[in-house]
Amino acid sequence: MPKLTHPHITVDPKICGGSPIIAGTRFPVRSVVIYVLRHGLTPEELASKFSGLTLAQIHDALAYYYDNREEIEREISENTENEVRRRASKTS
Image (spheres, rainbow, N blue to C red):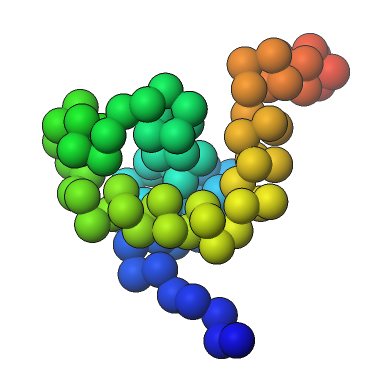
């Protein structure tokens, strides 16, 4: 099966540590997943809350998540507040 493309998602090592983001923003795919799938916002509510995002971008981010679930779940677990604080304390 050919690799699916996601026109609204990009990865740049210089932005957000190379996490998949919505193209033209610094909004990580993991944040879309957290807001929609964990906090229960609808894509429309998320677009309203973050006016720079379109429904197409939000839906593409969710599609990217479903196509790359392991990667995004790993990013979510690595970017919890406790995990970030733990890593920061090790470098201090």
